[in-house]
Length: 68
Length: 134
Image 1 (spheres, each protein chain N blue to C red):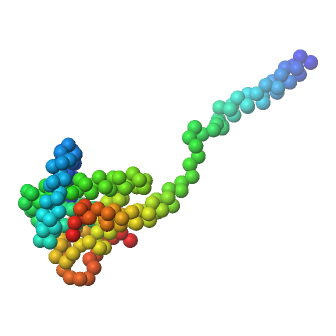
Image 2: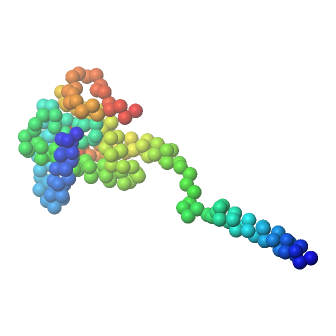
Image 3: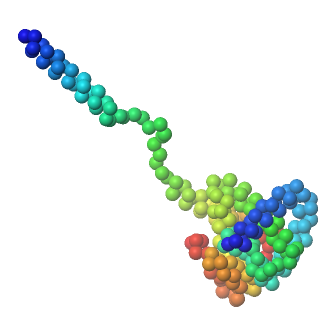
């Protein structure tokens, strides 16, 4: 009787031990930086297209900077 | 490339000076444009793929000063546009060079492509643009 209780006690402890062991192995925590989805390529492309017009304006508006 | 670096260093130093002497700089630039135009037409100085003017041949001290002053002003304009558009100064400078190469280099003027060989525009046919332009 005593020994059975002892066995039960051991089995009762097992999930707890597993739990502690698992907690040590797998850590799920929120990342401290926001998740970043990279759309930079499109944005750069847009910047460069706009820049082309800006640069034309720059040259025509500042003839002293771009002498013949 | 070394010459470019030297030019840039000198330009930046001269920039600090010209800012403190704005009045003088304006007077110098009024005279300078024609000196620069003359030197350009003689192929002494020319446009580069980097968006600045550089020396194809050894210039006079006066022309050298004018070119350096002009390059500082260009850099300031590029910097301003870059900050407005979220681009880098170099991106603006290179884009400008594309435009200059497409439209502004006259027959007889020297120009420098990324291969760092000075060429002179020979005839009416358009010159090669730097390959990053397209």
